[in-house]
Length: 330
Length: 290
Image (cartoon, rainbow over the protein chains, first blue to last red):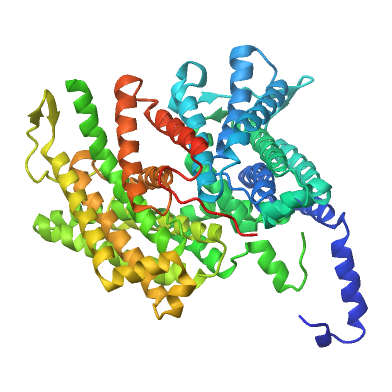
């Protein structure tokens, strides 16, 4: 898209649009409008349910995208943190008598602590070695959740008590749509703030070259760890929401396939793109639901679509389309 | 003692399959830097195709050969249609493509075959052989022997033929290999074909012991990948040692600690090894160029 193709009158409009797009509040405002307008197109409780699931998984992907897209570190075990958050709100009320909201916070704190402890040695590893170490870590959590049946109900999972706040019970798909929508917006704003901070710049420097970043005075190990801990907290909160929303949880939430799915959402939507986290999640949550009409051919078509997106939109959906529209956005 | 021998044999049997899957990972990685998560699907296709061709009345050896041949075609198609068009993309994008391919192949197997578990008749019957108080299935020995044959053939091929030397050159330095006239695209395609053949053969060998179904590939890919990383990615010796070690770890952990936690023990050991040796057991230390 060259400016020469525009009429002289259109040029100032285009540049004003471009500057509007670069405004720090442009993306949060756009996301808020998107989330507020979406219910107009949701006709049934089932639609609300799908939309809420998209937002919950998008929340987890926001954190993972900070780790993958900005710090350039992969995690193939991120569902493990979702598992910690999910089982925190299941076990807290059932076995320890804690209210759900406190269990949610405790789960997030526990995830942060676990990430802090395992992050230090794990993040020293590079590339595929990091992938296999995080994969192993995620599996360990899933195995514990499956086998400690006394607390977790084993492979069949366990029921999760509804969340109560000041006598009000959070239930129903519409309620959960709004709870997850507001949390997602807060999470996105927090992520955007982080990206624009010195830490965000340090993370991008690490992404481009660890040695170069450390020469420039970036404490590489510490910044990577910070991104890992933050990503763990995002995933943990998303896991708690998923458990509270569904009212039931099984160890699958922490499984290897779930971890792969999270990575796929981030890569499909676009690494390093906040909007991409939402778009990638929407594709991978909505697509399998619509493909069920194909019955046995469901998986074949899903696999083909993933392959085609990655071949033709290899930077991810949002960055590729943004580049095609002639405007790069963060 | 007899117990240990028993654990060792069952560990070696499973470990052999892990080693073959890891070898498949290594071959493709060396030629192209791609981690092929559809590697487990090759194992599944080998087993399932043989089962269904045998059911259709084909004699077993013929069915096995046809299964390997058709898996090779799948491997070549995967390279030509999915990997090659995205050749210049980021490694994580290529990994996602192989994950998409593994979902596709699993779905394909679900449609072409079915969703049930299947087995094959063991070649030398199922009467266990007694060695030092341990009972070994004859098929376990077939698996071990088969793996030795595959590894020797692969070694002879890579070490003794011009094509194999081109493969080594490509994995050492792709640009330099192209400069001396090696068609690296052909080499990468070839590595997919050989990996598919190895995977399919592993699937056929192990099916009489562990059964097969359309979804056995995921777990095998995961274990094979872990084994390749334990040994140090890119090292064929590492892949074999890593696979056998992983199988033995699982067998002894299941025997002495708990069968539920056998995978946990295996991965704890892998984590410990990687913390001490971040390049795996036989991996090359890579110096980052700034």
